[in-house]
Image (cartoon, rainbow, N blue to C red; front, side, top):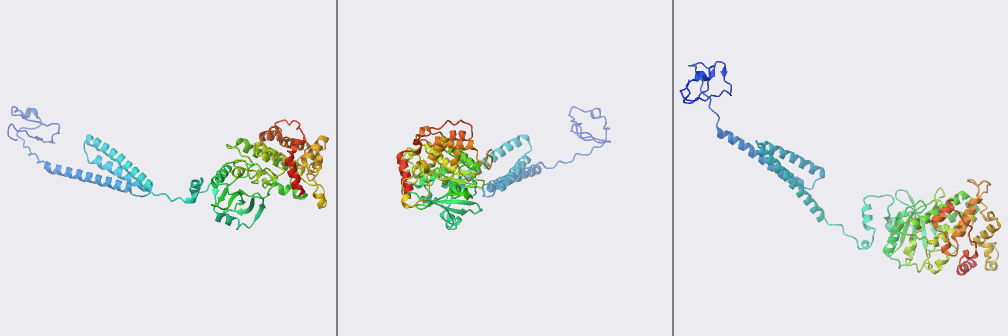
Length: 509
């Protein structure tokens, strides 16, 4: 036993006492046996073992923390370095995620108390937010610093250039596309296939790269019509979508040169091709088909006049501008371009708008409105029912007989229908190539439907435009949703005397 008065660790026969039985013997206490009864007096106690050096333990702990914190700084540097580097988005996210997780683990492992860990975690979150914001700012600055591709001088004034650049990467059906002159020349096989020709345009057949057939119209118009006006008008036309209207998928505008419009190609061509080219072709147009044509054209014009954001006037309704698809359904073409040809509406008669025999009387004095299209539509209805042109000379006499003024009561179709309707013999002037059936049907002619169409035609061709119905009313009358009052059949529906004299002059030549 140690000297009296010094603290001792007592060892019993059973071994080392529990740590909780830690005894401190003071100088005043001399009863060791009473306090520790399990230890016999006079037993020998082993001296305590020496503790390891405190300085070595502190050095090892500080070294471990230094290494961990150094690794943390290195990982943060790598995260920033690779985060700002120009790699893919996936690589950036992977590098940053690994760096942040490793940094968090190192910080939490390098501190022992919860207070130190809380401070370290807060510092780590702040560093994370700062690094990510710096990386976003650097990416935005790099994007802004990239130079934009130079804009061509000839494209500076074109309103569709930006949309065309976006469509360069991908194509969307239904969007207006600008074609180059080389592309137009390639798709038309160097303008080798002419399918139509008029006073102000020539139509060629073309094929796109995907095999789609198109009709390419080369327009010849006055140089006073600027490119901006032309582009504005075709943009309006391209935004119009209706099943009875011909779409406009593309165009070509050469600076100071030709202008081309691309339309879908309709295999059955135009209505005049079937209506005025002999009995054999007219047989392909039974009454049911002709009635569908009348209704489809009326719905297309009603859409242009009343349902478009900007009202569009056709100003040249005639069978040549009614295209027929594979099922002989009608589609109105050549609408909307009239405004670009004469926006101020003061030179329509000199710029080719309107066709003699279909023009409303007010078009001769430039008093245009939607009712002008109504008049032209009514004149087309007469031809659709009669199967011939409104102006047609009777007989085939000599040259001297051909120069004589025609008798309009016998040779002008509206006059003939007016007389036959008053006499109750309207069916005598109906196209004879259509098979007549008592009950109508698919192959027959329904007399009531014919009378409805003819009455609508008389209302549409009234001399006073205020007496003509709108195209929405025409659709309702043709489909039986509105009654048709008896038309005021008067000679004035032929138009004014100037129009009649023009017709006589044209027919006498």
